[in-house]
Image (cartoon, rainbow, N blue to C red):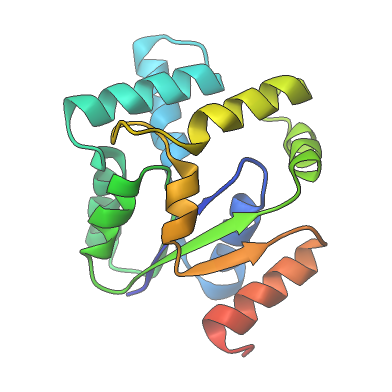
Length: 184
C-alpha cells in the first residue's frame, strides 16, 4: 500500500494530480477539505476559506497538529488500498505521515496569477475571491510558528518530490508518471 500526501500552493494542481492518480492508477482519495467542510456544516459556519482555516486550527489545537490527517490515515489503513491524502498543510502532518510505512510527499507549485485563474475556473464556494484576497489567503497559510496552523512553505520544503505546474494538464500528468511510475 502506497500513501501519497499532496501539498502545495493554492490552485497549483493538487486536485489535478489527485484526480489523475484516482482515475489512471486506482488510488483512493482522502480529502482534508471535505473533512473540514463536513465539520463546518456541523457547526453551522459559512463554507468559506476563513471557516476552513479556523476549524482546522481549532481541531489541531484541541487534539494534535496532525489530527485531521491522522483521522484520514485511519480510514486509509482500514481500506488497505493505495491512497492519496489531499492537502497536507502543517509540518506536524508531514511528520506524522513520515512515521507510517510507504509514505511519499508530493508538492506542486505554479505561477501565482495562473493559480488564481485556475481557482476562479473551478468555482468552488471557497474560491469566489479577488486576486488581492487570494494573495492574502496564501500569505496567511505560507508560514506560521504555531504548529497547529498552516505552514505551506515548510511542507513544500519537506516534500520528497516537487512539481512545477505552469503548463497543460498533460505536462503535469507526464511528470507524475515519469517520477512515480517510471513512465509505464
